[in-house]
Length: 106
Ligand code: FES
Image (cartoon, rainbow, N blue to C red; front, side):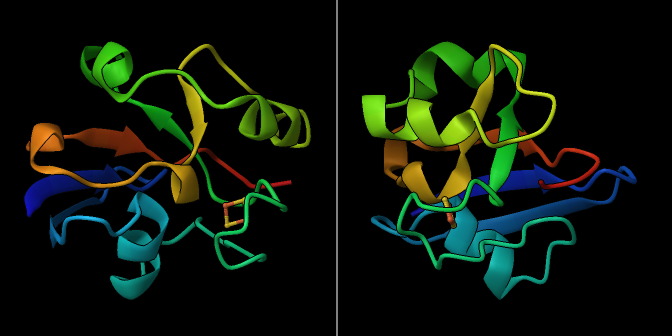
């Protein structure tokens, strides 16, 4: 388990106790975080679960896979810290993780 925080675009902070092996996207959807559409349900096939990993966490979370990188081309306002939240798996190592929801998806 890890306590993670997802910050909605309007600044609302969602503090979530996330199970190991769940994805950041699943936790966002389960907690009704606005702005995470996740249209493909986590298959890395839609780019509507785009988030910005907080600068302090970017290195630890790591870089997207080649497949995720290709899909990120369809996201809006992609930045160096962009990731698809369905591809970030929660582990204890991510205790305290902070991600930010972009203004819009697609
Ligand atoms: Fe579709 Fe993440 S939910 S790419």
